Image (tube, rainbow, N blue to C red; front, side, top):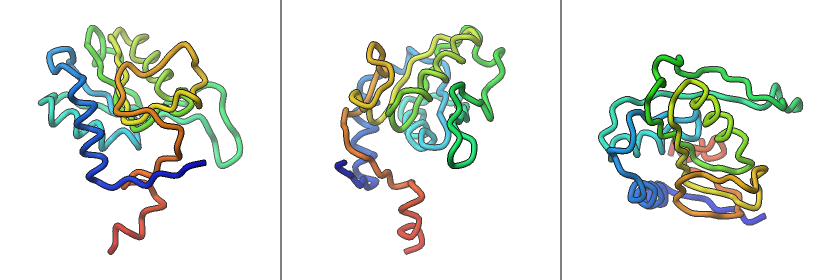
Amino acid sequence: MNKVILDWDDITRLAGRLIAQLDRDDYDVVLAVTRGGMIPGALVSEAMDLRNVMTAAVMFYQGEQQVLEEPHFLQFPGDALLLGKRVLIVDDVWDSGKTAVAVRERAAQAGGVPTVAVLHYKPKHSRFPDDAPDFYGEDTDAWIVYPWDPERAQEWSE
């Protein structure tokens, strides 16, 4: 599999491409998906002057081996915070799509009107062939290594 190592200039470019597709007046809140969506979520919220920023933490695994079929939400805003709100869900990548779809469904169940925006969309990896993020910076099949990924931790101390 092709591996692409991104730097901060790449992130700025991708976030700019994503932000150019969005209209600030279409959203009330940014819901950043932890952990990978926190930096893109911050960039989007700053550029669009959206100050209501929340986080969703979801996992589909327990330990290193056990994969969960249903999402386990570690953190999610209370329904009252999303009720009637236009929610921009931001994450780094739509790979299988499981996380984005779970967060989108949970936001809709809370009474929000969710939209999904990601830096990278991997259509060939998606488990949802009839679904996709509403907005994305670029599509790829590569393994993406973001500047904030743990395998880059040594670079942080240099």
